[in-house]
Amino acid sequence: MILSFGQNPAPEPLERARRALTEAGLAFEMIVCARSTLLVVTSQCDHLPGHKFSTMPGVQKVVRLGSRTPLALEGGRTLVEVVANGGKLSVGGQKEPVVIAGPCAVENFEQLSAVAEQARAAGARALRGGAYKPRSSPYDFQGLGLEGLKLLKEVGLANKMPVVSEVMTSDQVELASDYIDIYQVGARNMYNYELLKELGRQRKPVVLKRGLSATIDELLQAAEYILLGGNLQVILCERGIRTFETSTRNTLDLSAVAVLKNLSNLPVLVDPSHATGKRELIRPLSRAAIACGADGLMIETHTEPDHSYSDAGQAITPQLLAEIVEDVALIASTLRLRDGLVLPLAEVAKSCIQPDAVKGLSEREQIFSGYRQSRDLR
Image (cartoon, rainbow, N blue to C red; front, side):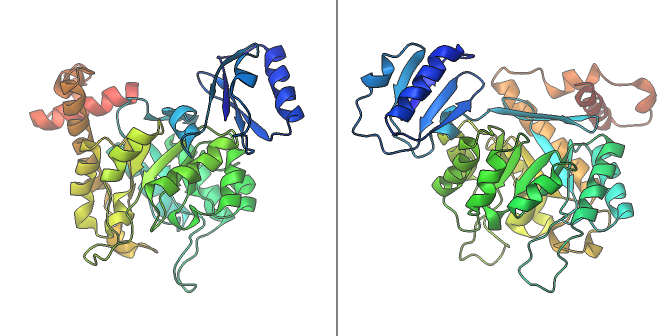
């Protein structure tokens, strides 16, 4: 059962309701959302009539839990914004789709710095990179740990990019908080409920990846653990699921993007790198992801993909990343134009073209040069 109050409710009615729930022997969590404050009863309360609480001052409505993921539908933020390291990332909320890029693993300063600089130039809005690497084989590179986190912070600051990185255990959450701006829960840890609870107590966004064989309902319930803890900044990520198909590393379930959009208010990213495991498939599936409504992409990028310490086969070059960013802009602009949300991409871009920067470029190249300028102005 959920007791819904309005935005910024008076303290007295809220405290009276909390006291009434406690006296009734009910456990509950208080969640402060963008549009309302909720008291979510986590105890069994089917025997209690709803009017017992609906008539209390300040209570706008009482909702029985017909869904196992009510907060994902009502409480989570549709727009997650991060301002950090001198950069800004906005995911969801009808904003333009974003691209988050970087190496699978942080290898050293030179590698990370080069990737970040070129990824930003290509149009990436945030830097991803693994300091802790859960690998199938204990003999594979496991990441640099704390040293990797420090490198991510240093390079993120230098390139004015918010940083996304994975944490695998509860004790890593506090350690990483000084260095990263967005926590990532990898596919192998989607069922790590103690980790999810700890992330629910944080106030930084969380990218929650779908488990290798997880259903959509299980993904949303995992998100519910974080939301119930009070952290409403959850971003879901479809990264492919394990099927009988062997042509790709996993099978990218793009239908999940549309389903998640229907079942929740949470932003949805797509990770085509882990979904396919093959760099030649990243671009077409990135196009498809944006076309079906994804709020952005997470793409593994490396200046020397074949020499990547991990997942070399799925890493792409910054040059290919730049082409994908252009694809994202074209597809998103076309769809938003059709819905009457924005001016045509070319019209927006041409208004921001800097003459000295486009000498000798074709009209197409001039448009995207202007688009990049317009995006940076925002």
